[in-house]
Length: 372
Image 1: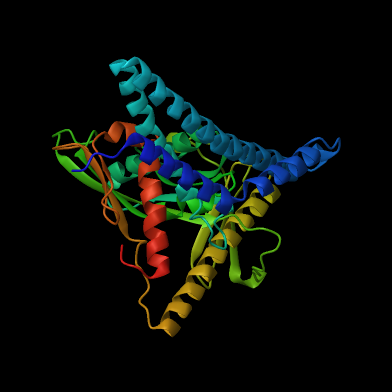
Image 2: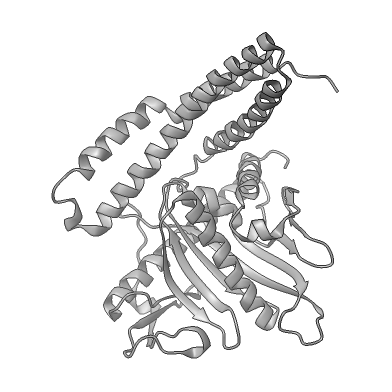
């Protein structure tokens, strides 16, 4: 295998970074930051809390993106100096340090390049994530809760705000379902590849004979609906149920019937919300989630119709997508991309960027009609 000259690779990475800057339009991003800073400084901003949170969240995200790009540029410049220093002093330790930094930059610039692939109609939106336990009994309920923690930890690592709208707890352990939002720009484009069934294989902690158990949980990711979207819902198509919010083990957490469940009769889509104090607020939040799910359904139907016109088959990536094996060996493997990790504990603690980046590339190839 040919050895790549570090200077050549640094030049290639510099060229890649410049291409990324052109695609993302760094100057436009800086201008947008200035506009957002003006909005954030307005004395009446927090009169509308929802808008204020969106402005500050987007400002924080955009600042982080620009800082990330500029930091990579500085690191590439510093790396050139580091290699020159290693050569001038014939210093093996410095050369080794430069090699490690080159490898790190290779990964970081590759990860940033993935961001340029998020150009779908709804990719820039925040995301609504729903997780439901499937086959596997109490283990599946426990598995659904483990997945909820994994995504919330991932968001926490990124500094992305989240809000849990509803959690339906199972009787013995775990959860039947949960719905939460990830409130960051491009959260939908980033997470949409997580949509599908996740399979866990382990020794069941709930089996007194210590047998191996396979359990399943479904993950649904949809874009947050915006005011420009035209999603009309006929009140006659809705069944509205109100109930008392509950916690783990069936404990009541509210003394009034404030939780709301909406069933969209034509599609069978069911959404719930119990995090707000009033029934009215919970209904409004549940309606927003329902609109998001209907928006995604509309997008999928339009894509399917377009593929039919083109004579193409639609992809079925919304089925089983990833295996998490904890016994008899330890591995997490994506069935579509082949990406795998040998440390499930780290993955379940939110270290899923490698899987997400591979998914984004894979989905882009699928949508472009090229082979995966």
